[in-house]
Image 1 (cartoon, one colour):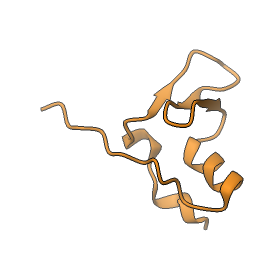
Image 2: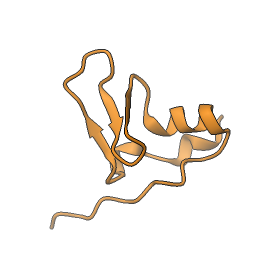
Image 3: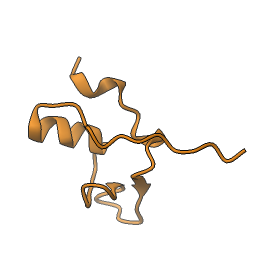
Length: 60
């Protein structure tokens, strides 16, 4: 298990889905798109848990 497993990008306000078939997931905080979840890319690049996670506000 990696340290980033407790970060759910789908619940982060910076996460977005793209129309790019090759890179369907993105992070507006760090400004990149990838095949993997952004938290996985951040962990692989830095060896640390993503510090940019900010929960989305509920719409209700």
